Image (cartoon, rainbow, N blue to C red; front, side, top):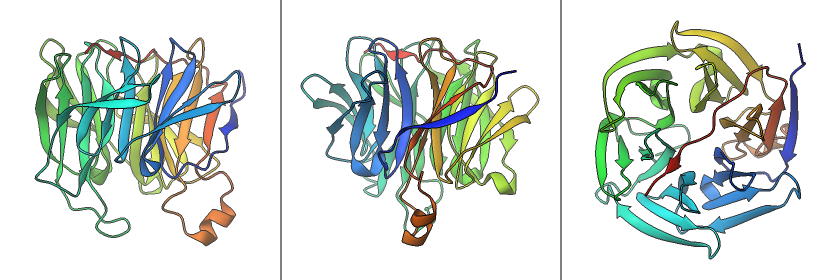
Length: 299
């Protein structure tokens, strides 16, 4: 069996690196730095990083079928044209909740963009509860609110048969499953899939592998856990070199590499001096399992 190897691919010191996405068309890794308000793109051949600055915190980025990307930033959905570095807002939500912002999001198997909101911290590590909602941006740019009363909407993905939607609400310290109607994008019948152990801390981003198992980033626990959604059991724990592990995605030419983002914000100066890898982006190889390509927004 191949041994697992973890390497730093970008020593960029992201403040809040998040939402990695493998762009198969360009062969780049795309991700966001929420607190720097930018979308970034890394070329694994030249090692060059390009970025586009937005005028609000950007929670997530996803692929778009017709060039460029779809983003959720501030409380807006937008279309990002990478070539001319412009964002066109297609919907502005939650204008009655000035302390909210978009967080994580992903495109569903039918080409819709699903993303959720969360409140900003009122003080370090403290969030007002049940302020977040989950929205679907349809290809015609209409928006439907699917869920509300969420804490921090996070880590989302779909089962391989597209009939189950997985969602993390970080403030519940749990992964939940919903029945998913792929035709309409509606979700229901929420149930608990996995409650995190104390040492696993808070769940953040998530992705699925080709065997239908979930990989969940545990922020402040310095690890990623692999879960079996059918049994609700943890199968594997992957210890990472820095505590604030935020999200992960599979990529590379055969989707056998796991890309992992991390944050440096949230650590004190003293902690940062002890954590040289905080904010880096990592590549994990030798896991013995592959991922699946990410879906593209068809709007």
